[in-house]
Each structure stands twice: as structure tokens, then as C-alpha cells.
Image (tube, rainbow over all chains, first blue to last red; front, top):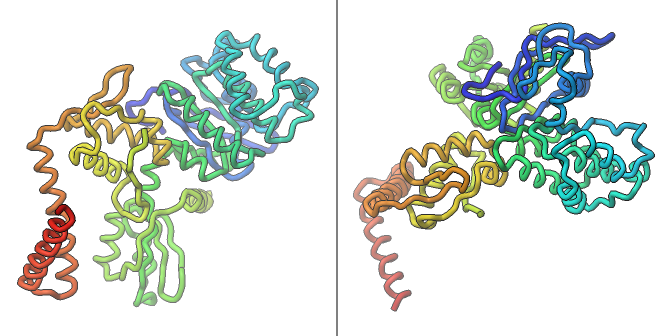
Length: 307
Length: 135
């Protein structure tokens, strides 16, 4: 799964991980540089495990991971991480006794490009008092503080695991602004795991769907939204194998009954799909774009059928 | 800067096409003057809720048409438009809109002569209104 003419920030080649009860991969994909990629999938799909693997925190069983040109072969050291910012899904308990500023002081030793001015600006914009202990902060407040710390060294690559969890709508909007500003120069790469569709719609250039440890696909978001359509058709001769005929439509992805003689046909080749329906005597009642969650459900159903 | 571009999710045209048509219209219609600095690719993508890839494609197409220019490090600007191109665009837009109206007329079962008469009357009425407004 490679995007043509695109420099990769992250390359995974046949990468495999194995836990006691969970297997991830093999994963083959290249996450393009200068772009925002959203990792989307149901809970327990392996999103957080994937992040940990990218940071060299999981033993890779097979295949390769390359981060910003550094091959993670066990001898890579920690140098490459100085150009990466990471926000974990859950706060680390052992840091709870620190104030935000103390954690930032600690982080600043790790990153040569750390800038206190940037950190303070982010805190101000997020309306966070850095002198408060992380354990005394609300969930959202701590999230904002940790995000400021993750971004203060202006990383080339920013990895965010469900960044908006716990944020109120105002903080969420501030976060979108900051992430937009971060991407502005055009050479930064943002990878975020998220369940918030509005966040994906507003931020993402690419969507990486994962499910049960498998990559279902890396898609250009707008292509996905342009190409996938639901065609509602009326079948007057259902008895004569109308639904079998619909399953042969170009770009066929899914079919469900929507009422008496009404079918919802899901396709990713809308023009030819619609023409096929008309040519075969079906009455096209409506053609609609699909929402991301419906596209994901459809991909999951196909994967389930394959298993 | 904010651009009056709207994406209509009900329309079948791809997003890049919708954006491109509207931005081209703003330039050829003279709403965006020569030398105007356009938003960066990321800025426009965020404000339209579309991907940077889509905006980059639009900017590339319009740059190939000579309507905008990108200067390394400074940004993307509106280029000068030949008056001939502007006139052509105006007539093209007019033709498009008239065709839509005619389409509706035909759907309603009007004869071509009826449409022509209705068109002349409407044109006369509008032109008179305009004349009265400005006097």
C-alpha cells in the first residue's frame, strides 16, 4: 500500500507483532510526509500497539519499520526520537506527582530543538497553568498540558493517540487550530488515532483503516468521500434474481434491503455503478455520498466475510 | 484570507472540481484582483474541510492555466487575467445559466417559441428595472 510520488515519513514492510492474545500485522504501508494521516478502527484494533511499535517499544517479530529514514533494527538508538513528538493514549501514573512545568523541564533535556517560548505559548493558548500538579488537573486540562509538551520541540513527526479525549468543545477547537498551524510549513507529518469523525473530516488527508490487527487500507480521504456512494434502487422483479444482479454492479461494496423492493447498493465506482443499475432496468431512487463510519463498516463486513 | 467557496456535499461532482470551478470563477470574474495572496494549501484545506491533496491539485491546475502563480517561500498569488479570457468566461457562465433555464422550460413542456418570448419579456423587464434603479 504505497502512495505514488510521495516521500514516506513512516514505512512498514511486512511488520508483525505478537502478544499473548493479540497479533498485529503483517502491516505494509507508507505514511506520506507532509500529510495528516488518521488511524481509524474499532477499539482493540491495534492502534495504540502500532504507535508503541513506531517508538521502538514493542518487539517486532518480522518485517521492518523505518521512521524518518531510520531503520528500527534494534541498533537505532534514541536519536531518531528527538524529531518525534508523542502523546500517549493514557497519562503515565509515575508522572502524576510532577507539575506540567516539571515534566516539561524533564522533556526539554531530551529534545535539542525544545523551545520554552513555544511551550509557554501553547499553554497560554490552551489556557493551562503549568504550575499545577498533573494529578490535580482535570482529564482535559492534563491532556492539554501533555499535548503542549509533545509539541514544544516542534517535531518533524507528531504521533497523537486519541488527542481529543477529555477535551471540551472549546479546547478541541483550539487543538485543531494548533494542529493546523503545526502543519502549515508543509513538511511536517501528523499521525493521529481518533474516533471523532469531525476531527478526521477537518484534519485528515489520508485515512488508515485498521481492524483486528490488520490494515484494511490506506485511503486518500477526499477520494474515499468522492467515490463511495449509496445508490437506492427499486426492484420490481426481486423474485427474478434482482439482488444477485446488483451484486455484480461495477465497484460493488455492499447491498442491504431498505424496504419493500428497495435496496441500498454501496459502490466505490459511482458513475459506472449508477449506469449499470439503469441499464439493467432498476429504478434509481437516490444517490448519496457515504459517511466515513458507513464506509468503515462496509470494509469491516467485507473483512469479516473473508475470514 | 477567507474565500467565498462552498462545498455542496449533495452534488455529484468531486470535491476538487467544485473548488476549482469556484476559485476560477472568482479570479476570472474579477472578485480576486491580480496580486492577491491566496491562503496556503493547509489553510484552505482546513477551512473547506477537505484534504491538502485536493487543494494542491486545484492550485496546480489553476497554475497550469496561468491564473495563479506560486513564489517559493512567499505563497500563491492571483496572476493577471487577459481581458479576452475574462470576456470568454463571462459569456461561458452566461451560456451555462441560460442552458439551465432552458432545460427547466423544456421539462415543463414549453415550446421553443414560448421560451424565446418569455426570455425577451424577462430581459426587457429586468433591463427596464435596472434603468429605473440607476436614474
